[in-house]
Length: 286
Image 1: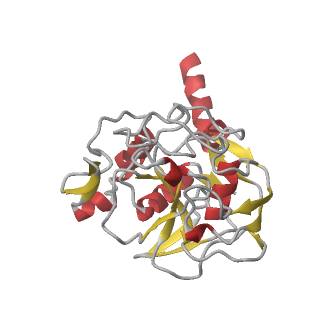
Image 2 (image 1 turned 120 degrees about the vertical axis):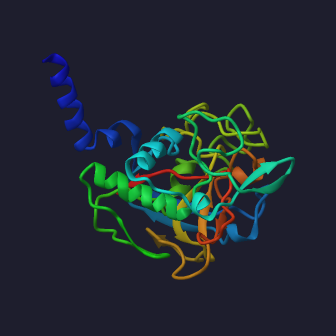
């Protein structure tokens, strides 16, 4: 009877959002300077002009979504990722990208465990996972998908990807330098620099807001279509109105220090088959 009671309590906690309580941190709303100054080492032109952005409070996952977590989704639904359905994935080997017909989240061409961030994930794969997890916790799914068209209902309570503005705000965690660690970063502080593979999430110290691996380990998909920055102040921006590419942030295990800066902007057309073993994601909730 004791074990039955424990199982009942665990089930109730999960349905009440226990997952979010344990694995998410509250990010207080505030205003920050987005982008990088002209003098920042490694700066790219799309990181400006710098401008003030105000972000409402939200909850963000402490960690990138893991292999184990994504595996629960696949086992429950039979979902096939973009790399699996296309039959093509790309892996970083010997200093260049190599196409492999059997590369996917289960086989990223390096050893991984359940606590590694899941990689070889497309933007659409991340969207589908968000909606599934929302349904598991009796939350309202955020996204509606019709083919390659996806809309976001901002008025509901499910899991979603961060906006680019939210991501940078959370990464900086009140800092203004190139990294949340200061003017520089080292391989004792983040997984970057062509280390050969991802590492378990949480292997390095978190930023001051309790978020792990915001620099390096795996690129993280954002909601936004990539576009030029505004030169004026903004509140809760959602990215460009149109465009071919979705934003990726944070850099990865196979990138250099410049690519893991707080301001660095990556992007890829989500319909592109070029999904590789550095692409992952992290969840947020409003």
